[in-house]
Image 1: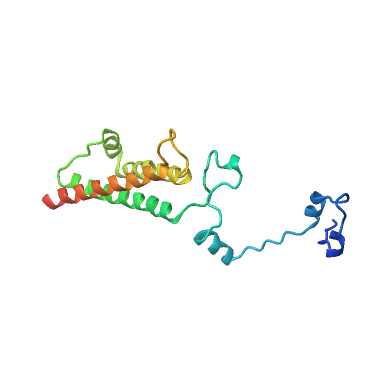
Image 2 (image 1 turned 135 degrees about the vertical axis):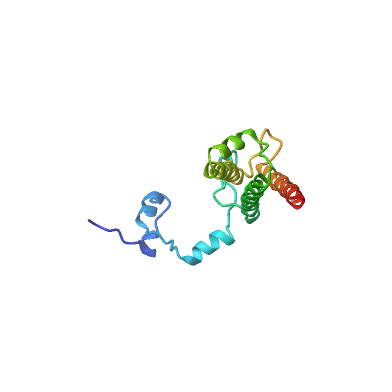
Length: 167
């Protein structure tokens, strides 16, 4: 098997008529070097959060997202866990699950209830983060929906804490 060596600077001095950028690119070795520093820069200070080409911006699904979006998604998941714990505590003290679907899961067993609750919270959170810059119906961005969901969940937690204080 024959390996190609990178071209020297003298080999690059071609006239425009002789230029063959494709073959030149194929002959060059890959200069990228990946390390923990690369990972740190990609996570904490990414250079591109949107599509580079105009056709990439028509359906902007992000592979890198703002830290605030990740924080909102994690808050939503943590509030969902708190909601599950408070709901189970209230049920243990004589309360009942109002949501008929989640009540059916609770009748199956505790694990079905918890798994369904986490699945129904985590999947939409991931989708909302991935499509955060897309305008739904040309009106609202999913990042706003995510922030609203966190606010509503926080209100639900306050309500459940008020119910728990009465027990």
